Length: 190
Image 1 (cartoon, rainbow, N blue to C red):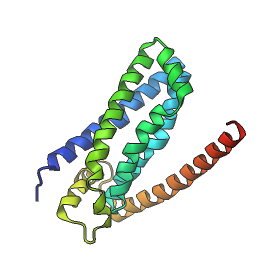
Image 2 (image 1 turned 135 degrees about the horizontal axis):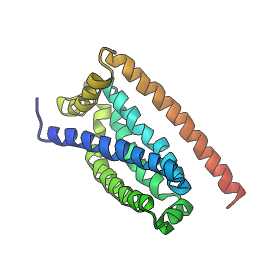
Image 3 (image 1 turned 30 degrees about the vertical axis):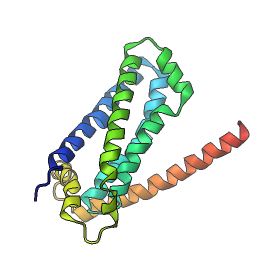
Image 4 (image 1 turned 90 degrees about the vertical axis):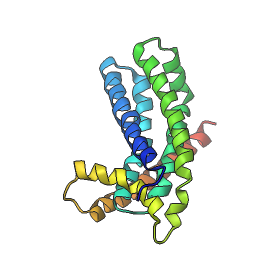
């Protein structure tokens, strides 16, 4: 069954691959090649936070409804991670090089894209609590299943869903540790 938003979901998935995987990967390679420490560090933070998008894809492949919550959470966390570090941001903004300029353009693009995507995907967050999942919600599973057919043919959906669940557990533990560590640092150096 096709819904009016089906093509939008597919375009969102394609745009996400370009803006959240290929462009930052290219920027990261360039940052290492040019020894740009600030861009490298901020992209390292970005990849840690953005891994929640990959986890969401695997949750969706497995048909695990919590993916309807992790998707919007990742979209909210990515702009925060990209703008939260004022020392790194200042170093990048003061650098006149092309890498820093392109990074700043990408940061604005991905932040706007994430904000719009957050609002769009947030409308589907109630799908996480449906039993059974409606056909309108299942449309979100189509692009991840297409990803599975390309990169993981023959691997059961349930196995890939389990990878997503384990990834989410590890992500939660690491995020809790970094939150605790940040809080401890703030207490020592207010």
